[in-house]
Length: 377
Ligand SMILES: NC(=O)c1ccc[n+]([C@@H]2O[C@H](COP(=O)([O-])OP(=O)(O)OC[C@H]3O[C@@H](n4cnc5c(N)ncnc54)[C@H](O)[C@@H]3O)[C@@H](O)[C@H]2O)c1
Ligand SMILES: [Zn+2]
Image (cartoon, rainbow, N blue to C red; front, side, top):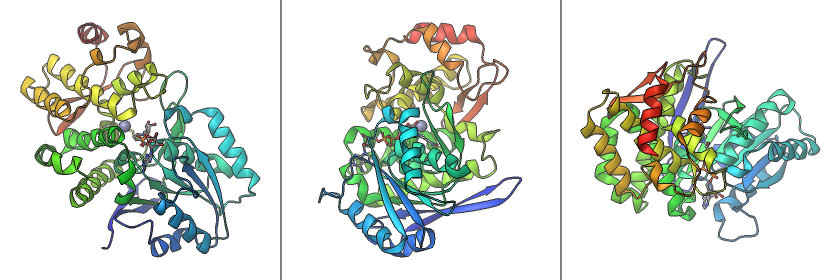
């Protein structure tokens, strides 16, 4: 079957740039046609999640993908790194940079990120600063990466202070999302990815949210058609939002629904796997809705419906479920202050008027936040 192709077009001041997202089954085992245009006669550095290995026969798609690249390009060098947010740090980045340089790359060399959001974010960041910027291709292997992190060009690593504070905007030249690769994904990671899918419905498209509520059983049983539908729809919504706001000076911030809370929660977990990104965002979205209702922006029944759906999916919905993390109101507020959306020391949050309608709330009143968090923790 032919892949679905979504073009991400960016209208920025300097140039009009677009790139394709290929979505479908069997893409990695038959990737010559797709890849030709992007890798032909280039030096390729393939940065992959250590979950994938040429020695493991179960990694059929990875093995076949590497074989095809080998055939098409001048040379391929592999760099394996562990998945998980613990890898998104400055020393891992340094290793990638030094190792890439040791392969004598030049400005026509290409980085391919083969893995989840962690690999995509750090490999993309490396591509953006090596030799002042070389091309890169995203091959996302988690649901989260296929629907979110591989698209839009945000790249980076975490700082000890909070998440994703060091990074750049660097768009990939192509994204290849093969649904077959999700078969080995643990249920926990699949659900974490689903949170970002639901997020699109909550921000922008109530009908999409309705359809997720109606079809969640098929989605959880990896129904291929449904997966294709939700991945395509998510990429469509994301590309629509970033089209006119690549660098997040306006509407793109809406994609951060649940993330101000989520990033703070994740950093309490020290990125050790106690809580993964999608789970933290699940709680973050529920908090954003509860705060929206508390501030009378959103009817309580809408908030209840959102929380009910996350609970049905066995996703966490409140801070009280995180008994192992040292979360306090004071520490939480400190972490909010590092959020990239803030302006002039004023906190910014993404809140909702209803399902399908998020908005940017600037100048958030800290006293309301304190009262809210004291009730939630
Ligand atoms: N750049 C962006 O716009 C953006 C958007 C959303 C999230 N993110 C970032 O993405 C990261 C989260 O991404 P993630 O959830 O993909 O994390 P991840 O890359 O750590 O992958 C999750 C886990 O799945 C494993 N894995 C990957 N592919 C697999 C497969 N096919 N089968 C089995 N296991 C597999 C990994 O080894 C890891 O243990 C966070 O750091 C978050 O900040 C970035
Ligand atoms: Zn996210």
